[in-house]
Length: 255
Image 1 (cartoon, rainbow, N blue to C red):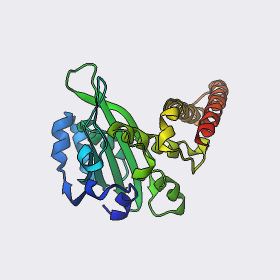
Image 2: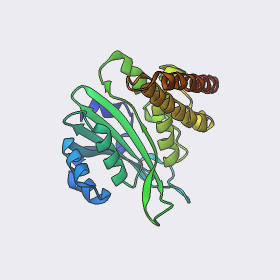
Image 3: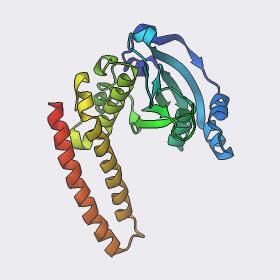
Image 4: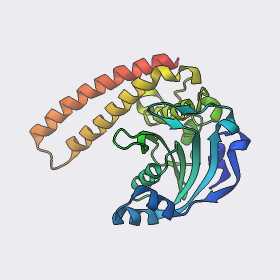
């Protein structure tokens, strides 16, 4: 894990391990009750290591425990993959296996992505945790000038510090802003104090963006009949109008 990637988080020095602690793949296999196929997917993981931990002791931020969340620490892991194929599934397995909010700094050669998952208490199984929120960038060139706009959203001082959950949610919102840059602009920034005001609009825009992408893929599929393609185009246009209105609202809150 090159130090420059971790450096983009600007974590307090006491949050960063002097020496990364390697985590064996078997730890995720046992925790997540994986199928044989999922276990094979983990062979794509070259190395995973704990490189940082945010706690009340290392940050001064209070823990957050209520009926939905139990956030007493946030883990920062470095993850090196052999190839990008099936990367999302491997990342999902790792997130599901961990009961703490986790930031994954993922690398494969020059390519990198950032993934964050915030678990919540399971409604079906007492004492169990499930992924309640997940934000993840696509693959980017870690050294490309355009990627600087992503790095600007990651620093510790750019996130809210009300408590550990607020920090994790703020980082998730900044990752969402990067993913939604087509709608809100590459350099969209929001002060930590204003993040709670755009949390729900951002989630709605993320949902709309995903729906638009799915409709576009269906419409462009050569097997889609012409009449169906025309119907999908109309539906896509309506969602785009909704997304544009929502993006304008978010941009207004960012100013």
